[in-house]
Image 1 (cartoon, rainbow, N blue to C red):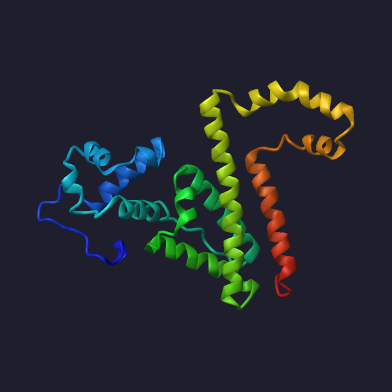
Image 2 (image 1 turned 30 degrees about the vertical axis):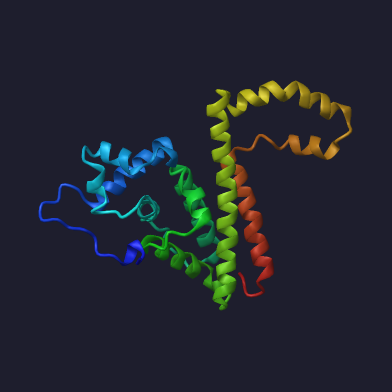
Length: 228
């Protein structure tokens, strides 16, 4: 069967529904409740139509997921020609996108959507990395490294939010609870490096992300003799 991107969309003469409307409602459900809440039946109920009607537009839930993933990747970061600034902006853009749509990072971790927006985003990311090297495979490796870093950071942030929902306890409240224990450990002197690391734990998640990203970009620059 051809990929969803290769098929002609269904267009009835009287178009009460559309692929765009179905995808928009599906994204709203996934944003609010996660992918586990997303089913063709649920989408049909939100659209006040029958489930069978949806299959005239979208062949399967997997196709719907591909369409959703591509739909939310419709904006791009402008390029300046400065590889470091462009890749930094790309990383921050991806982080914000994946935090805005918590279901997206796990979905793209298993397979790319291969839709036009995803392909445009990859093309721009490779273009951003182009000043580093004329080897497109090396540029792809750089982009992949940054995406993996972003995904790991986002998954950690999302896991923390999930823990907060499950326990009803914010990170600040958790820190307050464990503070007496940590103080005892630090004052004991058995773990001096852990104690030093604990002293830096006041950075926000966004600040930690930015700091780690700078280290990665510096490492990329050091590995590419032509980087400026």
